[in-house]
Image 1 (spheres, rainbow, N blue to C red):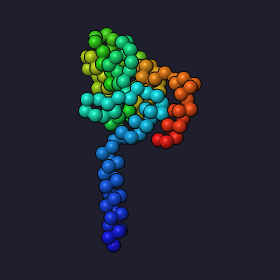
Image 2 (image 1 turned 90 degrees about the vertical axis):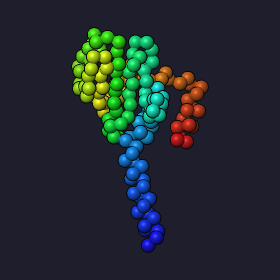
Image 3 (image 1 turned 30 degrees about the vertical axis):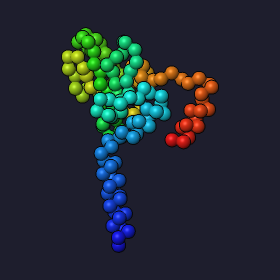
Image 4 (image 1 turned 180 degrees about the vertical axis):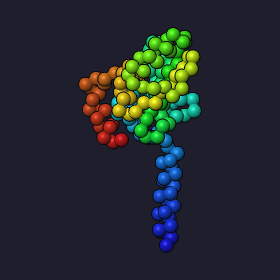
Length: 141
């Protein structure tokens, strides 16, 4: 009886841990496998940031369960944000929140690669010398 109670408590505890995760593990694994620029935000949550001066202020973040990723875009002027928002609208994304200088979108995992390439969030390909080391590292993960 004690072992069955322990199993039930373990399953409840694992379920609680899963519920508090909100897709963080899936997001981190997805970012690593697709060579995205993964960093920690100020509050410790994983985010994917863009590089370069043109797309600075764009980031992907987790928090919409395991099905969606958030895209936050911040621009200096309203004209720059409007132009970018129109481009995202043509791609088929609808904004969750849109202000004067920032907008938030909900992106499914199937379309994250388009956004990552558009905002330069993808790291460069590794050289051929490092490919075997990277493959070995991925197998260990």
